[in-house]
Length: 123
Image (cartoon, rainbow, N blue to C red; front, side, top):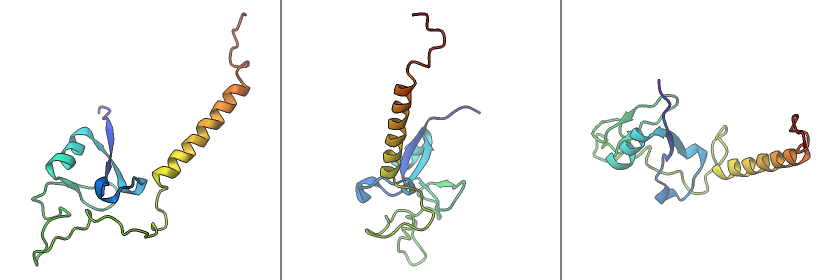
């Protein structure tokens, strides 16, 4: 096993939904991110390990249904103003705010302990 560089990928195209929320993000390696972005591949909805399928696969969210209409399940963004279901992870904005709070507390802690960190200070 080797470590892979992961990239955040919007499940619903950012250009259409204009938001970044944790519930709308997947982590993909460079290879799979490029397949999805440039070749039309899609992750199949579900939880855990979800298969990534090419546009020709019948499980692809944009594959035609039996009556010829597009199923569109994974490509459709959530409706505007809809409440996230219970258990939905916090939004990216909430996470950024939390990270800023943690960084501020850590900076305060370092300032308080600045003279105590050096056990071998000979000056």
